[in-house]
Length: 167
Image 1 (cartoon, rainbow, N blue to C red):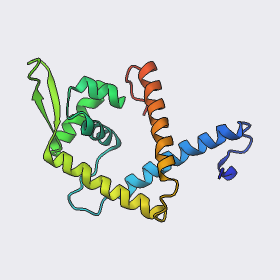
Image 2: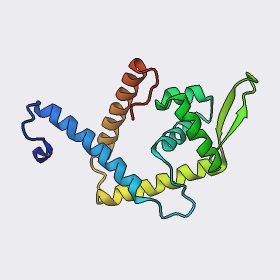
Image 3: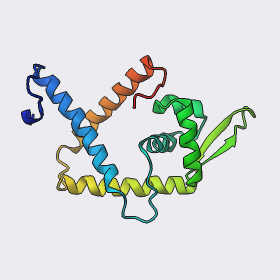
Image 4: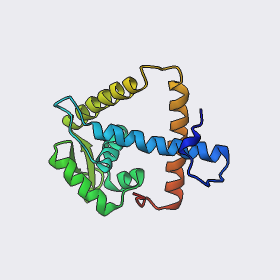
């Protein structure tokens, strides 16, 4: 149900606009709360938001050139270089010369990188499930909506910002 207490005084937006704004607010708050929690599993490596975006991308694109990672995550190439160095230092990725183009580089997950992602996803699942009291009643509909929002936002960014970071 829509919580009007979150609406700023004097906001004249439509009810739907205000509910969409509430959804955005809650998504940001939830993401920060998950990040603030840290991890109980000693194998989990704490990552910055940018490092997390790169690691999420690499789960589905395990031998990606930096240009593709930058476009997919919205990071600028100079920022991405810093992130890749950090992930390499943490033992989560490796960079290898591309077999197709010896001038290019492909970024690969290490076993530690794959394991870390699995461990932190388990911790996220436990934390979010506990926060929701284990209620899965609206989970599928929520996931469907959030996936549509994510896809729409990525498509809008990709079409109009040339992969530049907005954060």
